[in-house]
Structure formats: C-alpha cells, structure tokens
Image 1: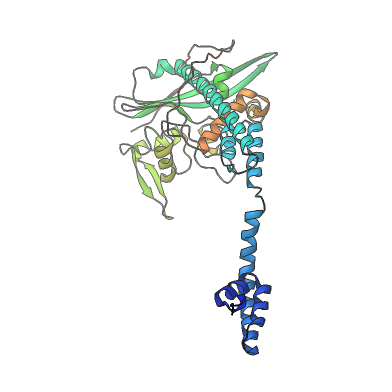
Image 2 (image 1 turned 120 degrees about the horizontal axis):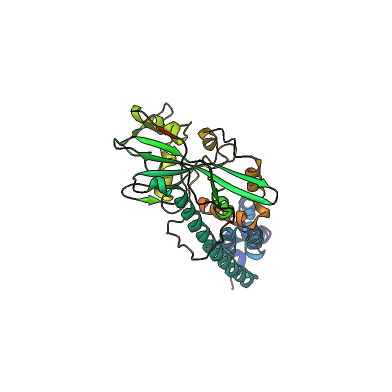
Length: 374
C-alpha cells in the first residue's frame, strides 16, 4: 500500500510551520488521536505565526524589485547637477548588475568619471596658479629662510564702477637665529580672481609651510606642520575629561596668539591631519555644532586672528553666491568633496594656462612685524 503524504512526519512538520493550512489538513487526515491533533495544531499555529513574517519578507525581497537601484540613479543625477561628480560616481557604481537600467547607470558612471577627471585637472591648474601667486607675493620674506609658514590673514573684494579688485593680506611666521618664532604681516597685495576664489574659504589657514625636511602646499591649520606636535615647542597634556591637547612651553606660549588658537588644539584633530591629509589634501578640521568647519574663513579660529574689518559682506556674498559663479562653485564643491573623502595619492598638476587678472599687482610691500619674547 502506497504511503500517504500526511504520514511523512518530516514533510508534515515543514508544511505546518511554513504552509500552515496544508499542514493542518495533513494533521487531521492522519490516523492519530484527537487530543494529539489539537495539540499539534496549536503548536503548529504558533510556530507558523513566528516564521510567516520572515518567509513573507524573504519572498518580497526575492520577487518584488528593490527601489535601491532606482534611488542610486536618482541621487547620482542630483549630484551631477550640483557638480559633485565624485559623489555621483559613488552612487552610479553601486547600481546592481542585474538591475534593468544597469546599462544606463554604466553610461552615467562613465560620464561622471569623465567630468570628475576634467574637474580634477581644472582644480590642479587653479591650485598651481594660486600657489605660484602666493609664493611670488611673499617670496622676498621667505627666500632662504627655514622654517616658514605663510598664513592668509585676511581677504577683501573692492568694487569701483565696473572694476573689481581682489586682495590678500598674509602673515608670515619665521624664526630668528635663536629659533624664536616671529611674524611679519604684509600690506594688502592684489591677487587675481583665480587665486582669490581658490583660497576663498582659507582665511586663517596656512597656505604654505616648510621646514628642513618637508614642504606643504595644501591649506592646513597654522602651525600644524612646524609647531604643533614638535617637542621643541611644547608637549601633549591631558585635561580633566581625559582629552589630550597641545600645550606650548612657557617661552613659546605667544605662539597660541600668533597662530590664532583661542581654543585647545586636540590631539585627535592633529593626528587626523597628520595621518590622512598632510601632503595630500587641504584640512579644515571637524565640523562644530554650528555646522562650520573648525578652521577656515567662516570659523571662530579665523575671527580670533583679528577683527577682519576688511573681510566685508562682498566676500561672504561671493561664497554664498558660488552657485552662480562657475569657477567658485567648482572649486568649493571639489575641495569640500576632497575634504570628506580623503585621497592619499598625490594629485598631478595640469599644464593649463589660466589668464591673469588685469588688476593684479605683483609688487610686494612689507608691513608690520612682531616678535615673541623668550
């Protein structure tokens, strides 16, 4: 006599757990005592209540198309419109190969990568041009001297009739024969709009720095390359909360004011820069509760250097209007993107030629000088 399907206990257990109605039918068809049938039915029901949602989720995941790929493409398109090509690349390349619009995503990915490479080349050309202009403006001070730090102390835009003039003021930190740091502040130096826009977010930052062992031409918090972390000038200490911070030795305490540090310099912030950014990209620190970076034009650190009376609304307006100024938008978007997704590989400079502003002045005029006491 052929065995009935409901006499197979293993099959019946699977059915009552995963396909409860059929499993119950099988239980009641078996030649079993009624009390046992009732117990098996009740136990099976509770087991099914536990497994059914899981099974349903699995089935939905298998048979209902996920919208994740669709969202990746939509987010990538939005990033392309903003000019954030690196983020667009991230979205497009996360589209699954079995998605029906995978070929479309791959074409968009190719376009985004091409735009990103063009943007990198353009920014490399701007960077090279801007650095050379800063070097030209401060070369008479730094020539033959080590170590040195060139800070962007202030910036301004002046509009007169149809002519716009862009200007920088630099603070250069050097050391005398006794290794005591001192600073020299330049008068206002006219710069090209290219240089001004490239460094528009870098007031208070060290644009250039060098010592006997290395040079850095990426913007960084002042002192991070020559003084902070250098045991000649100070040491790491711990506050009551267990946070490690940098403290200059007594005879170098004036460096805090010279560099504009009104708040503690924390070890984790410095190590983040040292380990991941130095020599490869600009560093603006972490974001504060206000949403601004800890360093740069709109930071409290920049404001602590001086009242910045010359940094008028026109400059802040130029930052906020960057969406309507292609070059500023390109620079700020790309540099912000690099700041969030650090690349350790060196970036190649482009040989593109950037036209100089007709209003640029290459003359250097020395300004005030101050020296820290021992």
